[in-house]
Length: 211
Image 1 (cartoon, helix red, strand yellow):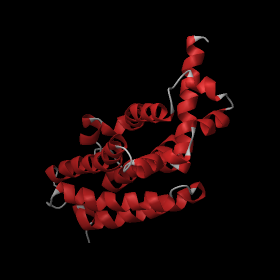
Image 2 (tube, rainbow, N blue to C red; image 1 turned 90 degrees about the vertical axis):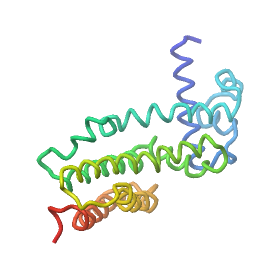
Image 3 (spheres, helix red, strand yellow; image 1 turned 180 degrees about the horizontal axis):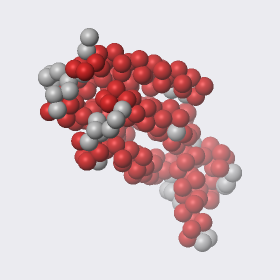
């Protein structure tokens, strides 16, 4: 088999396995299920991976690369430090960042499947648990906390602990993701709810928006 063809087959296996794992859980999927979904023999699948756990481990290895590629524009220190210098202001920028996260986890097939996989498998393996904490929880809190650090330095928000503000801002976002997960037809409703949350949050914490 040509090298490029083998690489394509390995990627297809990971894509299909992620979809099935996210829908049924790791224990609910067998090698036969993955091979059947792809339309290949089980023996052909074993040419690329030694078994189901090897496939799962490969999905985890690929997570950071694909996650960071999607969010690279928002996660660089230069981008985060200057994110509120545009004409839109804090409210619009917070909405833009949050909407990008919603887009990834609610509209992007990979992001949606990834979040469901890590949510269900975080207690089964330590690696899945680590990725869940780092990607789903810690990264969001850390990024938002850095934004509030910059806002405090510029005198644009009240002077309280940035991580507490980040927790109060990010927790409803996570709840909204759970509420609207697997409901693509309600995506606009989710964004409307998100904007209302940000509006109320800004009225409490951002000096320019306080009544």
